[in-house]
Image (tube, rainbow, N blue to C red; front, side, top):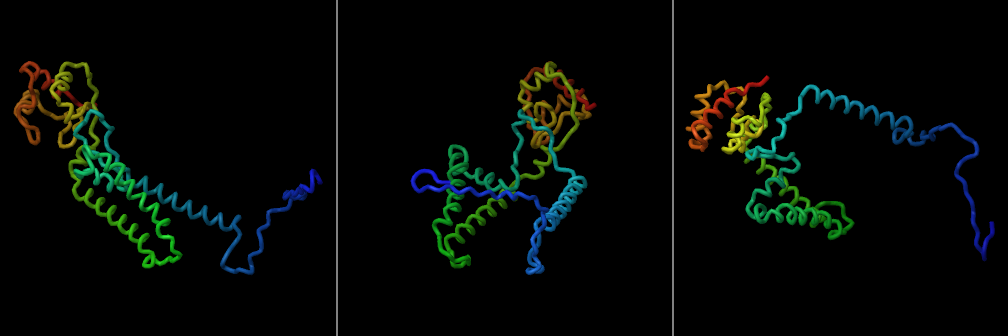
Length: 255
């Protein structure tokens, strides 16, 4: 069709007028090297994916996930631990130059510079060589990053208190109690909640106060004189308040 001065518009339709069956091309000239995507190759992909999916489902049924108890925001003694792929950043934030007032350096600046260097490596070293020995900058950046991540991850695992972590995350029996009870208010007012948690299920190094099996007299003695990691003199209330707290804790039983 002509329109304007010397302009030509050519129409081209790639939709065939006659519908033909979906017949794969003939790959006989390349024996063993290629095959039709549908259905040969796709069927193999589905079969492999199904095997891995069934295997993963069997693994989840055979081994229960290591779940911890429900998170308690009032438990200030809880020691958090991220997943393994964040352990190197977790360890970095433990050092004095990357924590506290310098937290922004450890959380943003150092990781930003490290990952930025990895992103810039292909632009800095633009050589056509593919051998690592002939690409010193890119290889050096990668080896330095791997060495740093490996070292920090190892340090985090080696210095973590795994026994305390297992104890603090242990799922214990739940108990229903009234938070308006006078004994719980005394428990909260004396700061016991910071170690034993708002649900009285314990924390890092602090035992749960449910199903203790202790008499009120024994509970009062521990609250006043301490036991184990709990020092003496933690309770600051009166003798009457101590008696009410002891009776409240002694009566906590799971149902």
